[in-house]
Length: 337
Ligand code: AHG
Ligand code: MN
Ligand code: MN
Image (cartoon, rainbow, N blue to C red; front, top):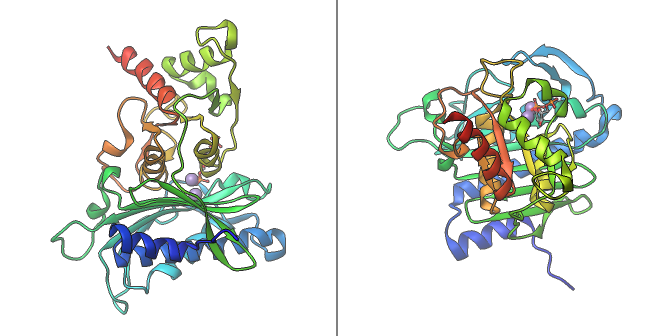
């Protein structure tokens, strides 16, 4: 019989053998995974659990909140606030940072999350997910402030997501490759199902919301036009397209079989750097993608080198198979010259 390794066992073994998962970080990851299990149960209940539809409120970015956005946010806070591993949390669904209440012990880590990614897919029963990113509180800083969160993605201690699809899969990096765990519902535990995830350098599949084409910048248009020209065009091969409108699901496909994902800046809202959020979406996904051998840029620079200036900062995102990301980035840099 093949040996089944649970997330708990995997983390303990990693801690013992390599020493790169400190005790507190291990606890943090386990607590996030437990919260994801609870969210998965709500997601699965759907209409039966009265979790579909809008909540009648807006978040700080002016987006209408879905019931599940709020439920998932609450589950993550409740699960994480008492364990003693965290100093504070920040979420796409909360305006300011959330300090661990005084009645609980304070830890050294900072947790950021997009509690429910792909909100437009909740009611239509398409894959959605939870994305998280972990930083360490800067040395010597007393208390916690928003400033403490404004560290580049390269400082992340861990990152991951949980995708709620036909299977519930937790994907994790602590800076030593990418590992996938599948939820076994009967056992109630995440089981290791893939180690050393690798993204092929080349691909024939791109993901972008084509309905925004008329608003794109010239280098994005050039790249996609060349893909669409297929075998007869400059790329000399046919491309396929996928757009799920849940970043987790699109990134999960890319980690599984390669591809390039783009949510670039466009002219609809020229003053915003992009749609996706640096701290809750771009940084954790960039960390995973790089750890799997892929690349992630804002079309010009490496995402994980960017120094955030505010919690809810937005960013242009190009990530996935290395050679395609480098090509898109090169087209942008050539334009700038
Ligand atoms: P969220 O549901 O957390 O607001 O994120 C949705 C994001 C991302 O998951 C997805 O790639 C993108 O928005 C889809 O945007 P469009 O509807 O503009 O295609
Ligand atoms: Mn999101
Ligand atoms: Mn969200």
